[in-house]
Amino acid sequence: MLNGKNILIGVTGGIAAYKVVEVASRLKKSGANVRVMMTRNAAEFVTPRTFQEITGNAVSVEMFGDAANFHVAHIALADFADAILIAPATANFLAKAAHGIADDLLTTTILACDKPLLIAPSMNTKMFDNPATQDNLRILRSRGVKILEPATGELACGISGKGRLPEPIEICAAVEKIFASGILSGKKILVTAGGTVEAIDPVRYIGNRSSGRMGFEIARSAVDAGAQVVLISGKSELEPPKNLQFVKVESAIQMREAVLKEFDSVDAVIMSAAVADYRVKNPAAQKIKKSADALTLELVKNPDILRELGGLKKSQVLVGFAAETQNVLNYARKKLVEKNLDFIVANDVTADGAGFGVATNIASIIWRGGDVENFDKMSKFDLAKKIVERVARLLNDRKFFPVNLHEHKNQFVLEN
Ligand code: CTP
Image (cartoon, rainbow, N blue to C red; front, side, top):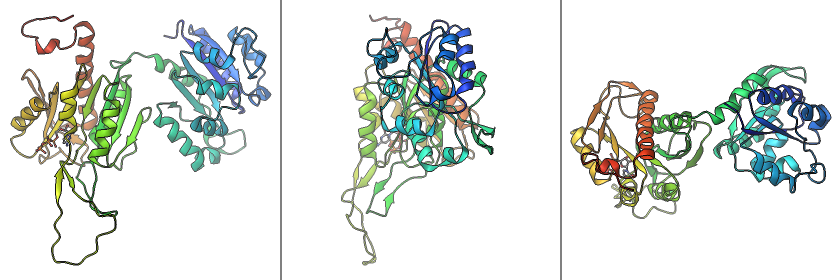
């Protein structure tokens, strides 16, 4: 799987650096061309010569001078890499990477590289659990950096806990996964989730019962299928899935802005957010005090984000949701047409085992051509997989058939 791939390993100054010698060796044996860069501290634990002998390539430590045939070393290394692995990654490295600090060859190379980055942290448990380190990991994850969870066990400092570098075989498997070709590999997918929050005043809002679970599962499933995923979420208490770009918004207006910013660069949009149809016309700047017996709020219509995307769409696949309480298929069909969607996922939110706040759903998928697929009650995780498979099928068909084929599928017209 790694045949001909260029893997750049960055070694930072942790005791587990010695394990990375085996990682480099395994990656090389599985066909990769491996280069190693080290921090000065890392070179205190393992000598550059060890990595040089294992990889057959010069090892870079210094920003200036030690890589004779590399012009501007950090740029050359960044260009060389198909993927970068940092192992072991110290807390200090995580802090620098999260904040764009580039004060040596390794951190400068990371900043100059836009290839997939896999980080394997290893440190003392308290350092790992420290909120500063956890915040840095969160920042890195939100930018799509893949983080390999440290293992739990005996640590070099004598205590037992979380912080061990995973075994070389596991690290290599994670590197291989970067190149694994899932059904959505090479595709960028935008998923929206959760409910929007429309302010009444600084302490109160109009919201809805959406938990965000369906959208989060779709985003997770798209990541598993190899896609680059942007998840734009309104209110949700759930922990966002890993290895995707997470954008938090509150109101429908903010969600629209965030979605439009991404729309041109994505291959598909799956709009599972519960967007409020109305917002308060003039939210109060200060907390509204209790006085009169009745209070009237004037509401104005929010933009319909999905309908707008339907008007703008070029080759993107568009998927919507219809959460209904009656006439499910008819209402859903109407939305499918009005919003120019490829398919719509419809469900009766009042049915047992479907709708808000539960882990299962009972859905139907209605296709543009009129076909309907009815699914039995299943977990939101399984339904997410079905949705993602169908999006992949549409996108992969388009690879062979030019855009808009399915508009003409009964006539077998191929446009070039
Ligand atoms: N949607 C949207 N912007 C809105 C409202 C809805 O993008 N302002 C999207 C939802 O994310 C969903 C689809 O449109 O994918 C259908 O949402 P739904 O609330 O069921 O339909 P509405 O068009 O708002 O119609 P109604 O509320 O009258 O049923």
